[in-house]
Structures are given as structure tokens and as C-alpha cells.
Amino acid sequence: MSTDIKQQRLAWAITGSGHYLRECLDIINTLQDVDLFLSRAAAEVLQQYGYKHNVGKVFQDKTASSVPVELFYQAHYHSLVIAPATSNTIAKMVCGISDNLVTNLYAQAGKTRVPSIIFACDTAPELESEAPREHMVKVYPRKIDLNNIANIKTFEATTVVEDMLSLNVSIQARLRAVIHNG
Image (cartoon, rainbow, N blue to C red):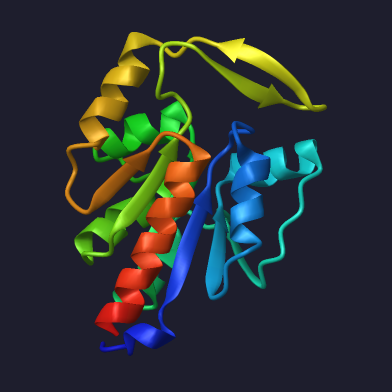
């Protein structure tokens, strides 16, 4: 099925992390033509943190077969953003496991040659992350988490970013590329 690239949208998936979640939502709220995909944990975390979004179309992980991924087969999306992405999600994607909405989106984006941009939570040996009720905590990603980040950086059509500036720059570059190629 052929879709005019100008009619395609950006798919944005959120996993169950509060790490820079507020900042991700700030970026989402500046974008047009974006659909939001929430893992089960993301839906809980958004509520727990009390965060809101201004996106019209929201898909939640409520079906065993991740029904919304069929939109990738219909060329509905030009890009996939997964931000923030937990270490669990990254580990599954590195191993090729697609057993929930977000990991299925990543697999189907790859199979339909839709580029992905990932903001992974565990990118450094030590970092600060926001916990519920607006306080910061130190976290120390495990060696396996850091190895999985290194591995996913080698995947085709996948850009891994490590901070909000890089996430925003990568998204804007992708949107310019879509417009230019459209």
C-alpha cells in the first residue's frame, strides 16, 4: 500500500520509565502529526508522575497481538521514536523479542524499513533520574545494560541518542528529511 509521505505521521512510543519523561512529553507537545503508543507500564508511569500530553491519537498496550502495529504495514508512519526506553525494552529489542506493543513497533518498523530514533535510559555508568514526586535519584546501569545500548547502536535504521538535545536534533533532522524526500 502506497501512502504519500506528506500524509504519514510520526509514531512515538513511551515505555515505563520516568527518566526524562517530562522532557520527552515537552518535545511531543511541540510536534504535529504524531501518534502516541504507550506500553502498559508507560500508562501507569504517566499517571503516577501526573504528566499530561497534547496528542490526539493514543494507542495503549491492551491487545495480545499488538494490533496497532498493522499501521506500519499500511505505511502510516515515516518514523518511530521510542523515548524514554527502559533497559528491559532495549534488552528485548537487542534479542529480537517482540512481545509487547513497543517491542512489536520496533520490530515492525525495522521490517517495513521505517527509521527509529531511541532515547535509552541507561547510557552511562552513572546518571541522575527523576523519581516519582519530583525528586532525583542516582542510578548505576549494569554492565549488561550498557552492552545492550552498544549493541542496539549497530542495528540498521536505528539512531540511539543519549540526551534531550540529541533527541530533539535527531527528530528535527528526520522531519526535514521526510519533507525533503516528500
